[in-house]
Image (cartoon, rainbow, N blue to C red; front, top):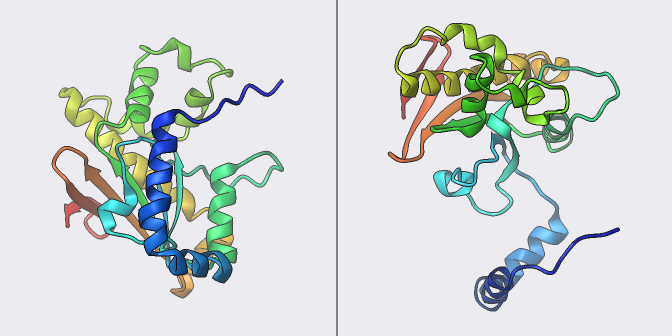
Length: 216
């Protein structure tokens, strides 16, 4: 049985406002986007967190970014097992079909998914341990990095460091995709790791030379 309901009234009001103003003033541009296809220069893998607004951070227009969001901006290792892999499918489409030139992994402060991983690894979230927990099994991707932060005494700093490891492990796992690694080696594709502090509005990038995150 389909349980779908009409949209809440506030969303309908916002839609009608957008259609009457933003769309009406730029209808030619929207029609061009619709008929011309998408030609993004970059893919961004970011967290589902509603506070992370990728297009606002980078001042991007529609059609500029191919954006994939998931819990804790994680990328699993290349696993061609015939199962369902939403993140891997999005990466394949961006790299192989859209041929993006840049792939950005964007982590952020106060990430609930990363906090869940910390709690799970510390034994404080038994509800995430069972195979029926989609979140728990997804956070298994990050679990190996817990060993690198488990002895950090300050909880805020421990969370911040594991958030950054979520970016780094995603960069590592991206390179396990053979066709992606080939494009990185040939210079057709560049990988970028970023972390943003939501409250401060700061942005840091991962410098592979220093193995540190540095402020932009």
